[in-house]
Length: 323
Image (cartoon, rainbow, N blue to C red; front, side, top):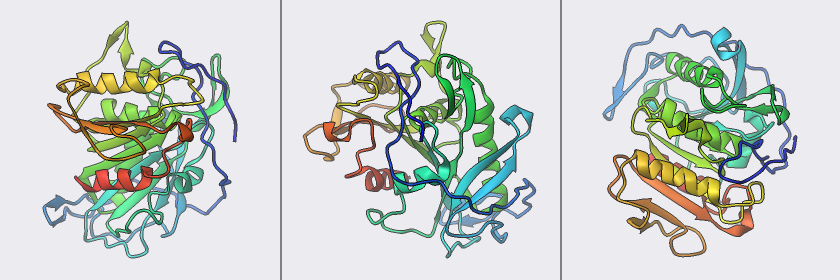
């Protein structure tokens, strides 16, 4: 794991923080992917299935690294970690959940950190999880890090290659598995939280809801001093720490909150309903008058820059399952 130093003021683009954990990456044998699924659409319980419905799964259950060739636009051959139930049913459209790792972490490492299929979450066979790997790149002023390119405005982390990669993972999953195209979700931590914010906007017509955690200020959405308009209407639940010890400030989280309040036309920061999570009243709220569900947690100081592990997994999966 590579630690990175970074600033925390509202105008900095310091290197994103590092996830703290104890899981080492391991190597497993993954399938070489092709985007050639030809199965027909299937409808189950109102959900419309993808072309992969009815096809046998090409990848093993229980966790496997999958390689896909994204082409030059997505920086070539890329990898993601896939977890599905051994009881996968190709006749049933599944939720698809993306999990984006933070600085210099891999998908296989972040999966147990998020623990979205852990003891706190009731198991469901109709969900598939994918955890994409970032590439190690030279970022001006930050060094060589495993990290995400966050769209055209995010210098020194600017570029569309990782958005192309995400779309390629989505197309692979839809071609080879039975995916409900209307129930695609994402979460991410730290630099992965940045990526979850970014797909909420640039790929907002592809993602139904997201939970970005401990992300930077939304400099990725600012073009010549003006915030851009997002595609689609993704429901966004931003989480950030009261005492984030990477940014040393609540400002990045509050600025992400305010971006989505404005983007979704919400009634204002004071028009909110307490969600009853955390140690104090109002720690997590849902805002009123928004065009899509917009939530925010300013979680307890004891978690620093990390996820609020007391409720993160259960709350995130409950949120995704509400759609």
